[in-house]
Amino acid sequence: MRALAEVAVPILPDFLMNGTLNEAIATNGIVDTLSPIPPGSNPYHFDLYHQGVEINKDIHIMFSSTHKYIIAINPNTGNRVRIDLSDL
Image 1 (cartoon, one colour):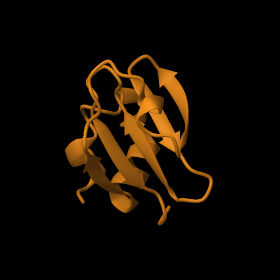
Image 2 (cartoon, one colour):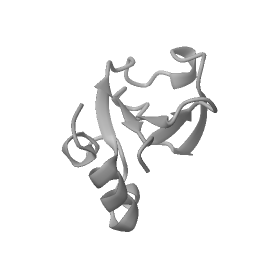
Image 3 (cartoon, rainbow, N blue to C red):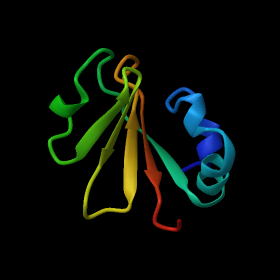
Image 4 (cartoon, helix red, strand yellow):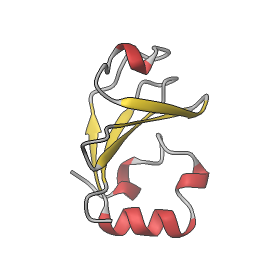
């Protein structure tokens, strides 16, 4: 697992990586790079457990009501990261 700032740039858009949110996650959050899905695929076909929301065409956030983490997915590239928010 690595700090968010090391791996999130290709996944998370600039508006999530600036300001207070970025500082809080970079300081306390832990990021783990997950295996990618095929580029251009629907993320919900590969993850039947998590709920999700499409932030924009480049970012989907998947989550569970029972776990303290989120999964950020860029469906265009297939890249995914798991962000642990349990310490926030």
